[in-house]
View (cartoon, one colour):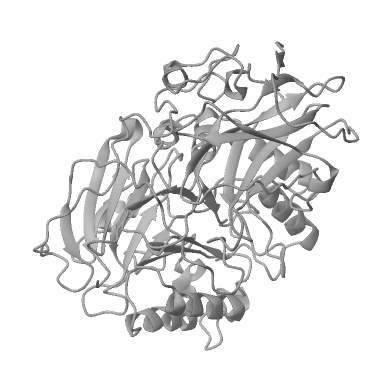
Length: 545
């Protein structure tokens, strides 16, 4: 492995070196409150300073209500970004190097890095190290800012390097030391640091290995990642989110995920559940192996390094259709620890294993990530006291929706809430817990606010439509399903998802982007195939300005 000597930078404090597997996390913040993940209280609304690049319109504009078949009078604005354009941060949107990064193995930078002015002494120009096998990732911090994540398997010290994407000529280096130890990742070493990053700015970053005998010498680096820090204040910029669910690492076709990983203009990416199929795992090591296998792929390394990541789980992260009332608690603890160990997620202080949380993107969008698996009580199905999500989670969701200052509210639930044709296994979905389903749908149907849209996975198909048929409960609420991104067999029921309730459906592999447009109150839903081919695109007016 080659070495690189740092020309200048801070003086390092040596820390005790522990050999073996380590996980490094750095939480990036800035002075004062930031629009972080909501831990139950109100958060400041942030904005984005540089919205996505414009792409040609491709779809029709539809109202979310009963007139679903009629186009709006207003034309659909440019809603997304051209995936073929060079990103604003200098990262190449083309094929990654063999290490999953934008630099080929051996340390030779690609053309994008040359264009960005990266010199041979820059941390991005160091040869990549195999000691970062799962790449890098970022996620929202509990107290604001961003969590930087990597797993490091080597024996050396490491440090986080970051720099503004539009000005890579300089960089900041922050060593990971004992004071940065965090309990975030059970059973593994984790570190948390708090560099002062500017809200609304896109940064690039990497982790570097430090020579034990001379910390001024860099031995290698991780993948190079990028992230836009959620900003404070008002904004009229488009917020663009990507998402998918259901990826079995045993499948050989990850072409759709490769396409998702090639996008470089998203504000965030959501893993909607069934990211791994860990059925049959019992020990922590067995669960870790499933995550390790999935996140070693170039597709997942690209998705994770290029986006702020939000994530929930469904059943297969634990076991197929597992029952929280009867599942072995030790087994569940192992599955839970493995989930958090592989996600860039800060723990909620009051409940470190709580998955449900929210994230604001300025005053444009608030994302509510639900946990629709671990709190359900199957013994209460079809009773007046049915519990699909806990009372605490339901109250948090309703309060958050009512108090959100954002134009749009995206609810991420791993299993669809919409009425479905021939819904086999419906007892395992919201419809099996009708009392709570009625509670949340009626709350939104009669609320004084609007701008709500649902995102779901689980059923191995993709679709866009309404939760209920015209005249039924939820007829004015849109649900987007993006499932089966890497599954060999799609859902044969897809051809039954027809109008007037459903606008489009497919059993083919796909992922989805949602572009939220605050100036028009519209959201454009685009389902994409491998090679970024547009399978379907619809624009819905869901917010009144």
